[in-house]
Image (cartoon, rainbow over all chains, first blue to last red; front, side):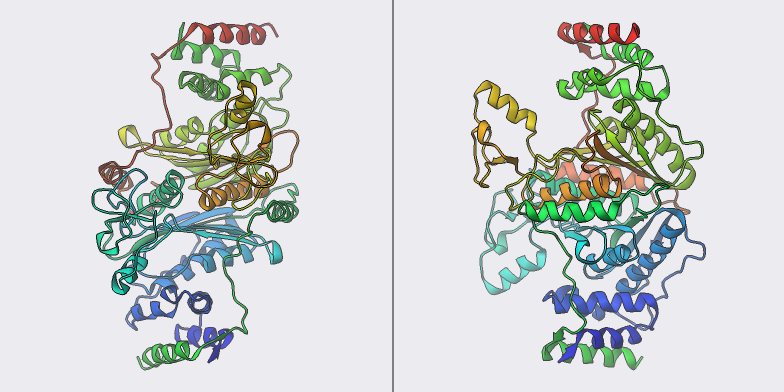
Length: 301
Length: 301
C-alpha cells in the first residue's frame, strides 16, 4: 500500500523532479487512484531514458506548435501546460498544439492545473479512427475527449468528456471475456447496431449528432489545425487558455460561477469535478507492486 | 421578389454602409433565404436610430470585454467579428466577450467570416434559461449554440449546433396551434417527459449528457467568463479565433482538412457547411414586403 502523496513524490523524482514532472506524476497516480488504471502508471511502459527533453519555450508565444514524438508523452503534455499558463498570464490568451503524442492519460489533471492558475483551460485530444460519424458506419475519428476547467474550491468545474460512450479497449475486453457489448454503442461493417464484440467495425458517437460534431470539433482543432491527424508517431493534442481576470473592469466571474453552480445543481444537474483525489488516499498492494517495478526500471537507467 | 444580393446591399446601406453593416445585413438576409425567418430581418424590430455606435477597439487587444446593451445587436456582433479578425491576424489568437446582446440571429455567418479570413473561428451564445441540465427538471441554461468554422471553398466546414433540439418558440407555436411537442425534447415541472405544450417546464439537452455539458461549456464561456449570465439587457456571446497559419513550419492544415472531409463523407458522415446561400437566390414577395417596411422605417429616421 502507498499513499497518493508519496507515490507522486517518488514518481516525480524519477521523472526528473521538475514542475512538469510533478504535474505528470500527479496525473498518472491520480488515474490509478480513481480506478482508471489504463490512464495511470501503465503509461510508464512508454518511458525510456533516451526520451528527448521537452523543448522549453524561451519567450512564450501566443500560439505554438510542438512535435512531441521523441518525448515521454505525459511529461510533454505537462510541460506544455506549464508553458501555456505562463504565456496566458503574459498575453491574456494562448494555445499550444502538440502532435506525435503517445499515451498521456486523462485531460482533466492538465486543465485543472490551468484553473488553479486562475485561468480558463481547454484541451482536446484526437486519436486513431475508431468512431464513425453520425449516420455513418466506418470509423473516421478517435474517441476525441474534450475538457474545460475554471474556478477554485467548491465552485471549480472540470468537464472531461469523450465523444463516444465506449473505447476500443472496452470492445477488446468484451471480445476476450466473451461478453456482449452494450446496446447502442457500436455498429458492424454494414452500419447495423451490434452487441457482438467480434463484429464491431466502429463505435458510435455519444448522443448521436451532437457527440459526432463535438468529436469533429476536437479533430479540427487537434488533428487539422494542430496537424496531429494521421501521424503514426502519436496523437494530436491542443491546449488553450485565457485569463478571465484580464478585463479592465471587474466582471465578477467568480460570483457568476458560484451562482451558476447553485442553479445547475438546484435544477437537478451534476456539477462535474474531473475526479480529483485527496493526497491521503491509499493505493492498494497491486498498484504498489506495479509502481515499484516501474520505478526500479526508471532508476537503474 | 428580391435577390439576396440586392437585399444585402440595401440593408447594408440602411445600417450605415460599413464593413460591419454589410456582414450584419448579409447574416440577417441569409437566415430568411434559408427559411429561418426568426433569425432574419425580424431582428430589425430591435433597430432604433438611437442605438449607440459599436465601440471600436483602437488597438486590438488579445482578450476584450464589451457591453453591447446600447447597440443594435447584429451590428455589434458583426463589428466584434471584424475586430477579432484584425486582432487575431496581429497576435495569432484572440477572443472577444460581448454581453447585453439582444437578438442577433445565427452564429454561422460570423464564424464563416473568420474562416474566410484564413482563421479558425469559434463562437457561442448563452441566453435565458429554458433547458434543464441532464438528469434535471428545471431550466438553468439557454439553448446555447456553439459554432466553429475553418477552411475555404469546398472543404470549408461550419459547425453551428444548439445544445437542445428544440427552442421555446417551437413550444409556443405548438401551444398556439394545439399540436403535440415531439417526444424526448421536453419535461414537465416534475421532470416527467411530456408532449403537451402547455405542460412544458423545461427543454431537454440534445443527446443527453454530452449536449448538457456542451451547453454548460457555452454558459461558462459566454455567461461566466464573458459575464453575460443573468443580464436582463441581453445575452452573453463569445467569439474566439486563432491563426492556423501562424506555425513557424508548414503544418499543411489545408491538406489535412481536405483529407478529413474526404474520410468523413466517405465514412457516411455529413460535412456541415453552415447553410450559406448564393447571391442570386430570390426571396419571395412576403419577404420583400416585410423588408420594405423595415427599410422605410430605418430610412425615415
